[in-house]
Image (cartoon, rainbow, N blue to C red; front, side, top):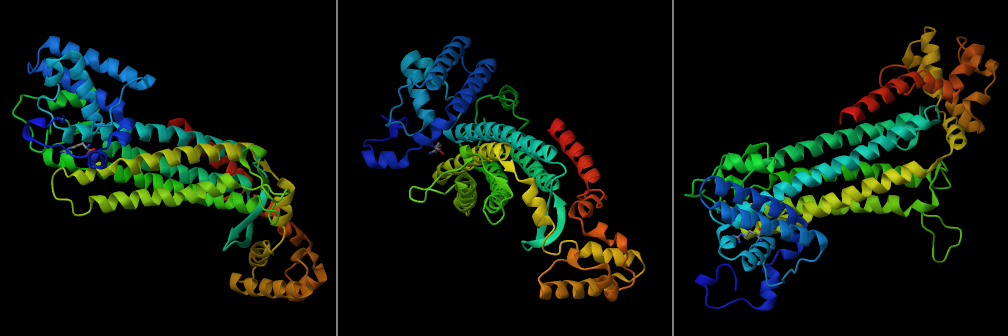
Length: 458
Ligand code: ARG
């Protein structure tokens, strides 16, 4: 019989029961449910609402159930609508009347809100660990390839040479911002709804501050209606996941391009590649593509919850039962994808020679040649035009700027001298960009130190 058996004469049929249940997804927050119940029972006893003997029986029974769930020996019953009912039913079967007193001054509405908040905090903590590991790998790859020169792109066209380490560190800072977003989501979840009961609070002398303390929440939610109906913190978590997946998808796209024979900048390890069932030569960057693809799912999770919460009147509505799968899926997907990306980066080979060779093509020295003239007194706009004409001429001839003789350069401007060759070397071009945040080797070394310091603090 359901917990509300008193009011009912008939029951629902099996399919309707299954349709209304959340037991499957709730299993992911069973431990949080039990933590919440232990805190509630402890507080009830301290307030004299239940006896110490009842509290002891409840806490002992709940600990045993928690262990069985952990071990996979707990006998779940599909006839239970959700985890709250499963745990309470089994507890009461085992300890009798004391079990029936656990739910005093509590509703499943504040109970589920408590569970999800505890779960959201745990998910954020796990994701922050994965995020930290990925950032550590990015810093390591940058450090191991500090002086490797590659083409820098805008519009996916050669722009100016940059250091590969600088490119890796750009991702480091993106994921550092993601960590900030995850911490903000954790902070949003870090408030205690327990004691709000169904929607209006309760007549029992509950001490809400005490369960806040026992459960390690940072604060107590000041409005019972808001406490049971707020799921904003899950949106915050999903948004943080969505942005981080977007960052991963950008890195994946580059890995897919870089590992193609057209680029050849990196070679993925066999352990992060797959073959083809028909084409014997194939080595595909499947895991980068899959991560890129999973970004769509995580965006979907965010949109789904925004839509579920839209127009809901206060306070609890059963619609809110739909709010759990999405954040769990988003968090698991991001956690898995960060781990895959860390492994892929750590094991890939960086083809230094190929990157350097490409960095010298596509007229990527043109800006520096124009700067060369400008530094000798020519207005930059004029220098831009002079070099533009030289590029056009080279394109006609099918050669690079470095193939022009000094005499030919001097025809374009007599400011050109022998030392212009220095401005045509991609490594020198990158090295010269020493301003803070630039791609010069010295600037990147300083940036790496800043990245390491950021890793040490969070
Ligand atoms: N299974 C429900 C959920 O996940 C628990 C809260 C149910 N409350 C209610 N009044 N039906 O949201």
